Length: 398
Image (cartoon, rainbow, N blue to C red; front, side, top):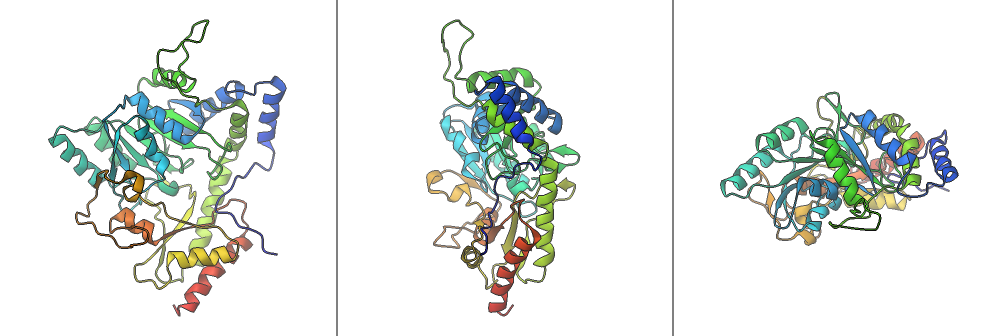
């Protein structure tokens, strides 16, 4: 019988590194959001990535929320956010009753368009509505034009939050993603390149990184004051990472480079095997970047007879998982009414069922498919996937 092929699933180290750290937590009885694994995981991430300070939290979403609080986001403030992303990039903006403004992507990297960002900042500043922060995302592990975006934010004196939830291990000009912005976000969700089953990390790269990290730690542990009794002068959150979970993370960090190597090999395999299918292209690999290829993503040309849904249904029939590209935030019902800024000035709906439009992010959503990128896949598994796609093209006589 054919076995199920996952899109991306947890992959523990073959050496059992994770079990060693978990056992240590049990033997020391530190089964709480405190302990050696938590503090050492933070230090190891700082050393690996070259970040200022790291704070281990319960999720990447919590890390974005804490970054926004550290910046001082409050009710009514504007926050510019990349539209083509998972909703966790944008949801925390609303936690503080701030207002998201979504920015379109560009085709070179599929990430935030620096020109659209620059035009948006200038337009809002002209009417006295400067945003309090910008959130850029490294989608599917593809590095955004981070130097350009960082320079634009510095020029306009707007803090930059770098959502590297999907790009741990991606390097641009010798620096890891997550270390360019004032704050960096890492996710260890079950489908990420390394996992703690759930969890995240906030990287603080500001000049006052230690002070900011201590404040985040205070908020993340229910904002408890250093008094003998339980005293609180601010609202806090239960966002701290567990010592057991951090043990998994420490073990996983040891195999990060190995997982990146495998993800890149999966992407390169698809590129070779599917190169002959007309109307199909792959996600871009930007210059001066070493991308982790968290998911391998394809795009279909507008006039390609094979459609994304054809691919996904055919793979489902073979017990293989796949996924559409993220539906942009400006097209999500929950964010209806939020402003969206794009270089495409006249927007119109191109797909009535999904609501996709003719923006860059809208078209990437409408015509994209995420192929299985599980690091436990064999080449035989990938051959099985490629044959499904080849059969579709044969049916269409392409």
